[in-house]
Image (cartoon, rainbow, N blue to C red; front, side):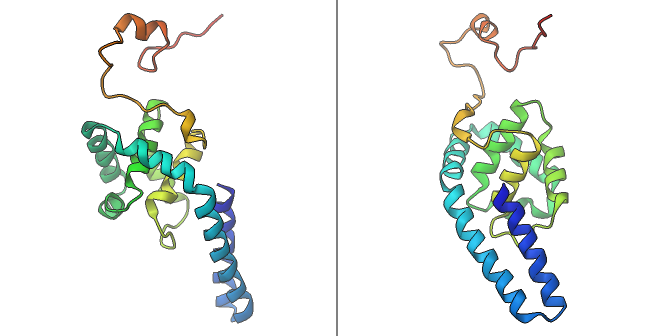
Length: 174
């Protein structure tokens, strides 16, 4: 997330220097942006791979539900995002946000309005990190369990309630 913010600032600096005809400074800012992209790829590889794998294990129902949220929130970007390799990771993040009682379409709308997406190599990757930050989801994606579409046969409604299943209402202690 820090890299995302630094990249944004450096990109803004590159544009500013280019408008002022500061060729050397603009070139240095573009070079810095490339270094940050490399750093991002290294830092994000593992968490994104985990999210991607989790997204590939979502049920068809969950994938269609998240795609519908995407089409509702950002119809102009939806097909592009659905065709990106990062779509499964975004679908997993949207499921995590929904499990945490957030409205995925609302989060997507907010995330796309925060800053431009035109310079993104992968819009879905950028949205994953923005959504995780907005929804206060853990960056350590291995700590977030994959939500199941239906309880497994070994779980009964009684055992789900006893374990504090997220679909059950939570009561505050006094």
